[in-house]
Image 1 (cartoon, one colour):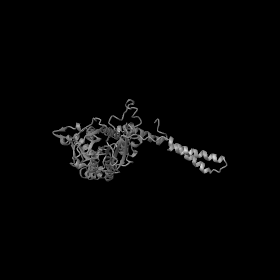
Image 2: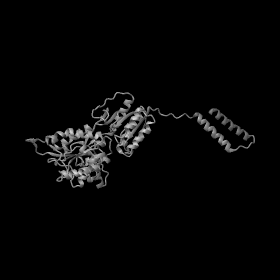
Image 3: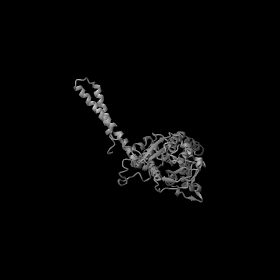
Image 4: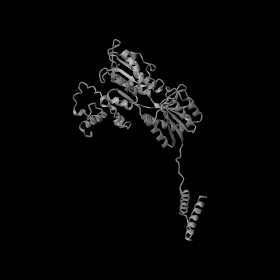
Length: 447
């Protein structure tokens, strides 16, 4: 029919010209209009229809933060890119910290009949009804980073092995303090060390596992007397901080320090549940008159390797943090989701500890590593952070303690990686270069 219309339009156009040649008056607008009709008709005939990519189906990704959150936006980018590459039409939803918004997003998106939902909950207890309704409709449900509680509809949980991370923290504390070499005399330890805990969210199972892992390493020393917790708070319930709120953590520690450490202002060891809490505690310690780098400054631990936490670690105010690569976690989530959708065998962990109150949930975990002052550059080398984001401000930097014989350094003792930095830290070497550049007006190269 379109072809006939095109022929008819062309015929009318020729006829109009013929009439003009016989002395008839032809309206120029009519001729122009006829030409447009012909062009549009021919275009309709010859233009190929748009070819849309074939999708294996829809997958919804539900995250607790917003697009400005560096951590969650990194997860979202990896998950969406990889699922899209594998042929799935992937949509990302941001809850902006609102559990009710997240619940409504799940209900609305479930009506589009997706294959699966990957959910990192704002509130681990707020979604059972919405997720169970989706599951009954044939949608596969996966819990991401945080375990959704009180439901039996989860196919898999993808998270970091925070219990193993806790063991890493405990082991590093033993190494830094020499606790494992503190021998007793007649059943009493000559130099027992003090410790306090300011941990994470009581509703977050991963935070509980982190504490459990720490205690697996430290509990024998608490029982033997080599380690003393003056406040007596040695359970997760006694030490947890609602929502990992740094402000609440500082308020609790303020009372604790006032009651049990009036002489020094801090215990020998202060273990926190996150970098955010550790940074807040470091700020409070400095403001309350405990000099950073002094003998009264505690071995303060972090977890999570946030940008600020890494800066405080590089500066020497936090002893170390624990790095959990969210890119690896996101890739593992894609592997698990597609593995279940394609009925591919997954080789993963199945720990009895991942009980969401209804049943044990099969889990795939990722590992972590300790990052101390001398290894913060690892996070720049692996592309996780730009160096400028993890270099501490000059006023934060604490001069490292000098060992008795370390003041004389031969040329052979200085490696290319440590030249230009008194701390021996390549990340700090970059800072030293930048500072020198500011002082002498150079670009910092060749210094």
